[in-house]
Length: 253
Image (tube, rainbow, N blue to C red):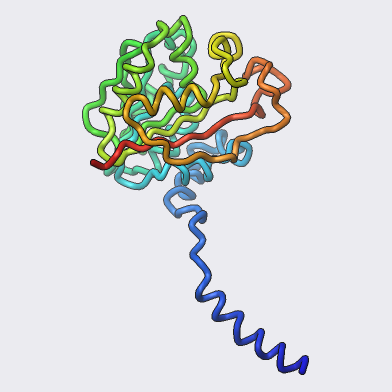
């Protein structure tokens, strides 16, 4: 009897494997290849902690696409986007004037990078803090830990309803807006200025008011040990602070 059961299991398991759903979380080759570029060896040491592969999969970025990155700073994400979209795609990086004092050295470095392959598919766009003008419709607008800055005094603050509408208009129908930022406690309106954090529900409300549809979230950057009361970039939370990852979609029609 026991032998018969083992034989039956041996017959059923291959059928189960055939009928099992495909693994949709596997990292595409174009993401892996871009991450493994020797030109970003210094950045790659942080990929596991920052969940680079998971975030790239979540953004749904693909070769040939057009990407807009808001306030890229050192270009940690820019380099990977550039490698993924390749020569048929393009990455438009937005450098607001109000932020220039914080990223002056990085901006100068990128003025050199964009002249050398493979980063010749990256453009640097300077402009007013609330402006968002790109030369062609984008598939993806991405911002990492900078959405809250648009609420701060040094950036204006920016009229977020108008700005999110510009993001909406910059995207192709069906395009996505991905926002990663540091979590603030619910209802804390002072958090963007004081703690460099923002209430996730505030972001959701603002972005949806521009016509976007909430399209999902990821928990890969959550940290339950963060009580959201410390400045996001200072110890002990620096590099480990609780972050939300939201994806919004512009309706296809």
